[in-house]
Image (cartoon, rainbow over all chains, first blue to last red; front, side):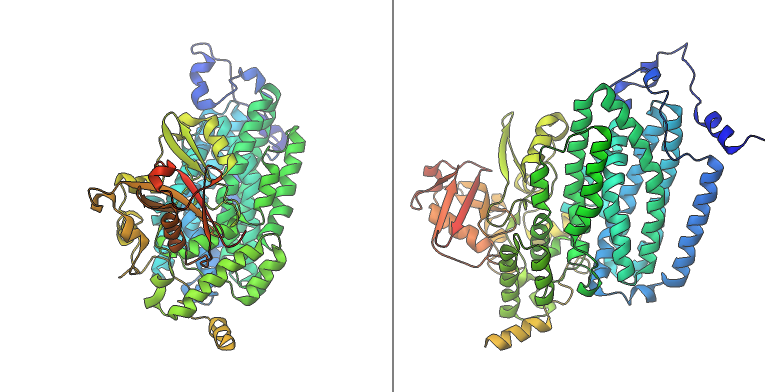
Length: 497
Length: 102
C-alpha cells in the first residue's frame, strides 16, 4: 500500500506526450487561454493544498453533515422568523445572488478541468467544480423553502432568470467571469482575485455579521463554503505565476480588470449588508474597515508575491471605499420597488455611526437621507404611501458594469460619455471605460436597461417595467421595512414643531 | 397600484406617446447633491432653465430644491435662456445641474 505522499504525485501527474494529435488541438488557445505555451512550461504546475479523491469525499461528507446538523437545530422557519428585519433582508440579497452564481462557477471549473494545461490543475479544477455544485445546492436547499415565510425568498431561484436590473448586472459579471471564459483568465480572475480576495467579504465578513445577528444557520453555511474556497482558490496562483513569467503585462491587465469588476459587484452585495442591513449594535466593523483589513491588505500582499504593480486606479478605489456603496444604497432605497428585498432608512443613531466611520463625504449623504426622511414626514407612514417616497424618473446605468451611475460623490458624479464606432456609451467611472476600451468586441453589443427602454424592448411605464420586465409583483417588490413608520421620524417632527 | 401622480416617468415616456411636433432628446442628467444620474427626456425647444427644473423635480426625493440653477454642458456653464436645440444637445449626452449659491 502506498503512503499518501507516495500516492499523490502518482495520482496528480497524468499527462503524456501526444503523438496522434497536436497539443494546440487538444488545448486550443481560444478556450485554454493565453499565453499559449507548450506543456513543458506547465508541467511543474503545483497546487499548495493537495488532496486525494478519498480525502475530498470524506471531508465534504463531514462538512455537509455539520451543515445539516445546524440546519436541523436552528435553521427552521421559526428560527428565521426571530431574526431582525433588516438582516432578514440581507439574507434575501444573498439568497438570490449566491446559488446560481456558484453554479456558473461549476461551468468555469469544468472548463479548467478539461482545458487546464496540466493534469494536476485539471484534477483540482474537477474538485473545484464539485465544490461549486455544493455551493449551489446548499443555499438553494436552505433558502428556497423560506418562501413559505416570505415570498421574496422566491428569488433564491428566480433572480438570474429575470431582467431585473441587478440581475442584468450580475449576469453580465458572472457570464464573463465564469461561463464564457477561457481557462487561464477564469482561474486568475476567479481564484486569485475573487476567491482569494472578495469572497472573504462574503464568507468571513458575513459569517461574522451572521453570528452577531444570531443567524447561526447562515454563519455555518458560509463558513462551510469558505473552507472549500480556501482550497480551490489555490488553483489560480500557479496559473498566475506562469502567466507572469511569460506575459507580465497581460497578467497585470487581468488582475487590474478583475479587481475592479469584483469591487463593483461586491461593494454592493456586502457593503449594503454590513453598513445598512445589520442592526447597529450587531455591526462589529464598518464595510470600509473590513475591506481595508481583509481585502486591501491581502490583495497588496498577493500583488507583492507575484511582482505585480498596484492597479493604476488604486487611489480612486481607496476613495470609493468612503462613498460608492453609500451612493448605491441611497439610490436603491429611492428605487426600492425595482428590487426583491426591503430597505431600512438609517436613523439618527445609524447616521451618527456612519458619520464616524465615513467622515470624508458623510455630510453630503446625510443631506440625502434628511431629504428622504422629510418626504416620509410630509406624506406620513404606511404602505399606501410607499410610492410617494419613491423615485419616478428613470435611473441610469453603466454600459460596462450595468450598475447605476452612482460613482463619484454627490457633488461630482464621475459618469463619462464615450462615442465608440458611432455609438454612444456611458460609464460610471474611468476604470469601467478603460475595461470597455481594452476589449470593446466583448462588451459593445450589450444594451443596458435605459437603452432597452428607449428602444421599446423594455416597458417605459414603471408598473409595467416592474412586473413585466423585472418579474416583480406587489408582494415581492421592495418596500421600506417599516413603511416609513420610524419612531425617530415622528419624534423629530414633534420636536421641530 | 397607483404610482405617484405627476410621475416624471409617466410624463416623459414612452416616446411613442409624444406629440408629432415634439422632438424628444433623451439625456443623462446629474444634479449636484444627488446619488444617481437620471434619464431626462427633454424637448428640443425647452430652455436650459426648464431642463434644469425637470431634473430638479425628478431628483426631489433625494435633493432639496435650491436656487439658482446652472446647467453645465461640456464643462461650460450655459446660458439658461438657450434652448436644448440651440445649445447643441444630442441624444444621450450628459449634462449637469449645479444648484444654490457658488
